Image (cartoon, rainbow, N blue to C red; front, side):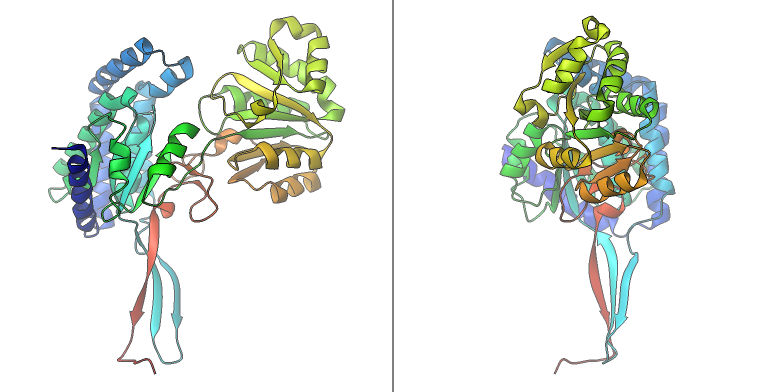
Length: 428
């Protein structure tokens, strides 16, 4: 079987499964999701053994420490996958919701209701927990999903999908087994082959680094929901509580630097820069963070007594466009809100940006003028996440302006259709 034949078979099976999913009631879908969650926990040892093969391969091929961290399945993350599925099961069913209803003068009744998208292809890297998150969300929203993770997680992804499908089939004999499928090859040509099948695949959602997302968007013939990168900012305003600001910046950069909602650039208002930056540097030195500072920030930091304790270099223009996914942070001193907003507009990626300030008027202006999917006041950028937003697991973050934006949960995985109900009306 050729690669295109293999992808066509997967896509055709997914299309058929999507029709079968439409017949499942919310109770039946939830029964499957709860069984999937139980099965992940029951098979923890098997999952960790399979994941160990991927981790060993990743270490031998030179994956960075943050990337290996994203790849790892430990007890906490397996429990997190199970918890995510249970949270999705507990959420209201997104299909069949009445969005709008109107009656025309001739008596024609029109109802706008939510429906599944159909077949959704998810292309992602490293994090095998995405397999469970994406499968659960797509299944609950009535969509069949085709999952294509990175080659570094092939064993983990296939094992997770197998456990999910087998658990759902045991819980519900009519469960369509092709509702959740994993592309079984690491061949890169599988992606353009799959995404050429517009007669079967309705939507693609890439989740990973900028290179992956651009490659998918350029080769796909089906619609793509994307974010190219997460160049997220925290702006420490002159009226900020500096203790709070330090905590937020540390969380945004250091809690998990390899994720898309981690801070990449710190903007500090000039009146507080001399006090704030050396104190922050002391804390970040403990995490071995590298500072890439503009001229003014570099001058402040290099003169500080703590300078010997941390990595410091001058920032280049390109650094401010860069998503590091590592313990590296850009720093720029700005002169007030306007300069901070202008910087974000030029260098940001419309993902997540935050201001720390006591001044409500300043905060409201920042919230209004920064055009990103998520904008925060006195909150870490790390909260841009479906679970933290109360959506259960998420399928990804969209920075597109058309359609879904921000964390994509159940509602974002539906479309809608119009139902017309009449009594024989004819258009004149």
